[in-house]
Length: 246
Image 1 (cartoon, rainbow, N blue to C red):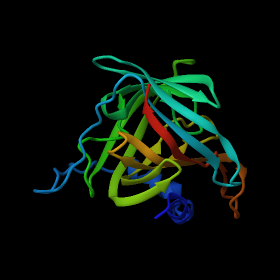
Image 2 (image 1 turned 90 degrees about the horizontal axis):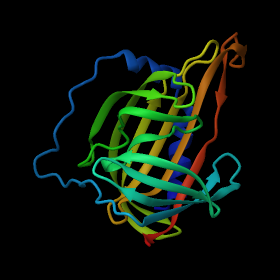
Image 3 (image 1 turned 90 degrees about the vertical axis):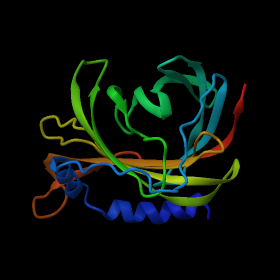
């Protein structure tokens, strides 16, 4: 199954859902997280090493236009953090900082600014296994302004798929996230982010990923009958082109 075909089907369903209804879930009690079923195959956390890199072709899912070739290169691995240099079309544009298991310490959220996360942003909860889910609340602080928000992450793990990308075919596990940024300001409600990753143990990272987001602007009408305008951010799809170690 190609990632393009799955992505179109999944995102059409995802965009048809009401983000507003999902926000209500943030006030619900967090259910206890289950252990892996007895005998279930699990995916351990990756052993990330300095010099590893992954390159992705990124495109705009709305238009199909290319948005650049991104390279993520591990610059440093310490006891408690991983520094990844980010290049776009050969030019270094940023550095992301992670804890173990690709859980973020400092990096941007989709369509938003850079944040520092405390505890680390729970992108993954290794070991991974189909049917797994987790919910976390983290403190997200904008280092430029000092403003902090409570960010809710609701994640689940789907099944295995054989995903075809420019780098080849890989067995990958689906990881989905609903992220509620908590950054409501005046008339603009919080950014509501949807992400889907295809994590491939063979490469220690994702082979395909997509993200989109939106928020409600209560100062403007756009939904009919006086409903507030939903403002949509970028919807981007990235596919692995090549990976390796320097």
